[in-house]
Length: 440
Image 1 (cartoon, rainbow, N blue to C red):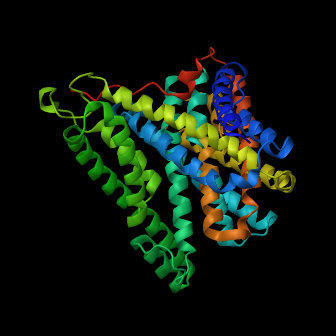
Image 2: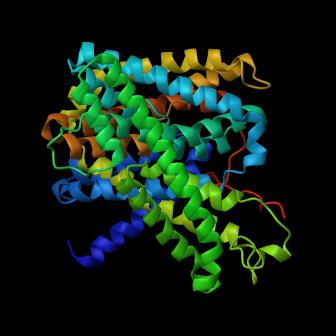
Image 3: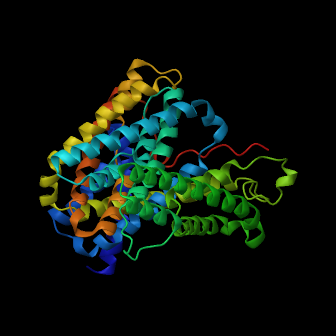
């Protein structure tokens, strides 16, 4: 393929992504499904592109898109507006992830004959809702403010739970002489493995999980505070968006190196920049979010990362459809249906219990929550991470991920048709409106 044809193909994919996003406001079909279908047409169906040449870059695109989306979610998280609905969102996120984790793991043990640890590893990737799919869909649905805010809070936390869960189980399965990265979290897990008792193993997983949270929080809060003071001193305002993107990548890498959860640190870093304690405008003369010239730096930063995330996310889902194998899809059909069934039942139970902490929830809202179970970018990225860490024994995961993403997004269609709202602009659906400026 010539460079001219290749670049033309890239441009066509981006245009297709915008069209799919606009059509999602009318047809309620998530653009994720359209992009994966386009990838399948380019690869397995018409063989216009060689899938083997793109398998190695798929994980990189997915990880970068997830970094950008989670940082954007952190920037858009305004603590004061979400505090009222925080208990319901947190309870729903924890219950939904925990019950789905156990149910999927038990199903995989019985149906796919995975070992207990391997079943929990795979389940940790499938148990979390994908905020990159659900958040744009929520903007297209006619939901009450209370329910929508609760689901936004849950979506922001769900990605972090998936990352922390998979990281904790991978550390748990690390071998003492595997030659992998040596950090305090890994060493804690290896000590738990050496103890050999069931209680010590469970305790090691929990301790590792909590340690990742603490490390990520401390690092992201410290870097966020320092970055907001240093950025105006080291660069002109026109370069702040790019430099902040570089800082996001550094936070991701440093958190991984010291044993924290890299993606969770990215969320906290964005939230820190958007929610630092306010002073007077005069005292914020050198603060990045009160720009000396434009006065709108927070919005510019949010729009920059939103557009970049949209571009990278588009290519990732096309690549996912491109590298999938039809033989893998056939073998994964029944297990994927079982996983989605486990997710739906766990979600319904979680919604019923979470009503205790939710405000202004109606009976129809419980049905809506139960159907909003999309899996997407976070699931695929975590699956690639598992395959890279565990090798050929988990080669079945890409086909299973593709099938679960497809089925869970089709299930979400039922909820969107039950709550038909006015068609929304494609850009507004994909790029959330920026949070209000921090109070002066």
